[in-house]
Image (cartoon, rainbow, N blue to C red; front, side, top):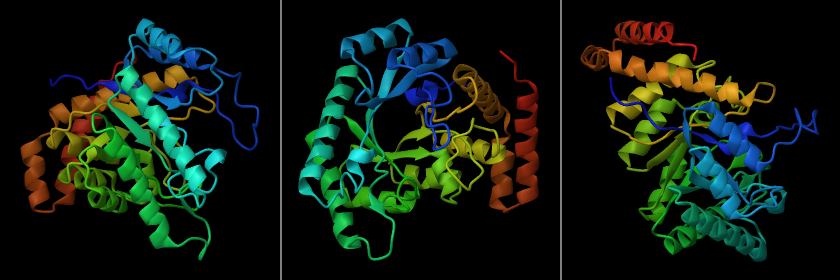
Length: 333
């Protein structure tokens, strides 16, 4: 059996969630250090992705380092909060140059924090960069603003990677980086080696992509720097526990990573609104371990032959045999 991958999670997995009905949250507030302790309690996590600034946190970066250390965790990434109400008309693409500068300053600061923590990358999710109505924006101008801002940021920090997490919509009706193809187009136009893609499996589903195909395209261009995994019903970014709905497509996604020898972290981006956050992470990792075992048992030669003949039924038989056997062997630990 091949070695298990490294497992990680966004620290928000262990926070308290709110929506427009439960505006006070589904449970009591959970501070940053407690979130880190909950991540440590999962047992199989090695890394976490941290938001910046540390919302509601009065401590120091040394306090965060100590919490990570006592839980055997590292901060793989820092995610600057460029998607909040402060940037309601965009971060890279805001019409006010002063606001664009403030957003870039936040991203530069987040990058300094990432370097201090020894992180692998800075994650950029420009959720407010886009439009809601026809004729609302000049498409040429905001595209150029996005590319210019990204180029400035990445060029200033060549020693660390940056990733764009694309998503079709929400909070904007149309986000400027909605899918793998347009995101790759922008990255290739910028042309810097330290800018790549974080492929969120759920965003790809929600955008009606085939996640395995999106991953292959990003890999073919050398730009798949990171992944987040979860699940949804394809109508919204539900961030459900990975493997809850699209079991076969999840397996195909990881098979694509395996056959390309992609070695990154298998990272959770889940929102357990009503579930116990520690147990939701444990369940996800049990499933991902089963996927890993199934990849080991899959008859790759027979699958390649079936794919060469475009034989869907033969491919499905091979996949079902590997995946269902592995799931049956999953230990409830």
